[in-house]
Image (cartoon, rainbow, N blue to C red; front, side, top):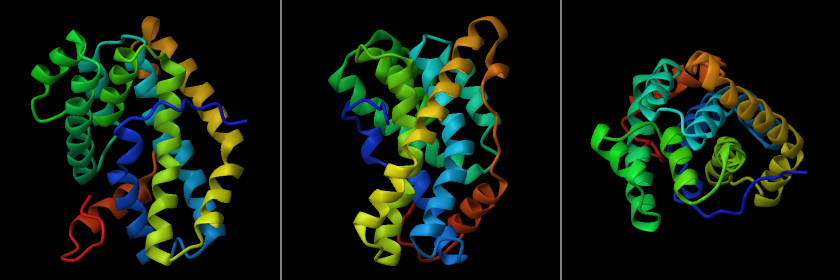
Length: 221
């Protein structure tokens, strides 16, 4: 059973990076319906989703956010995705500071005036809200699959119930990814940020760069 928190955050409503990648995948023909959407979401969950969940969980544990932001940069080869991640991080930080004031969030804002990576901000937001690494990891992991599903409904006029069914069937895998992410985040205390997942998805990164160069696109980021 999917064990994600019902905590409503700005992050759960902004899917810029997943939307960017999904739009590129739809245009390339890699997503054409519910079955291929499931394959895309599964691949994204176990790569970018795992990485984001690990970063968010580590931030929620109180690991140095500057070190985590550097780790996020190293795990995001695409310049376009780095820009999108920092933009979303800045937006989330602004919303979170207004909702759950925190000296840690204030310090993060001073350190990264143009925005820290979204998963890092998400983890600190969870910490400020009194939540733990599991909650933060679930938010990141679920976002990694719900974003593409939402985008595909719009891009392909896919039946929303079919998209929701894809997410429901992925629930056990989301649980597994969260368990892996939290376990890795706890190892950071003794082994540093190299203990975090570094799963790669080169085709997603390339697709994001191609998408960024389109003169006309449905999703700006």
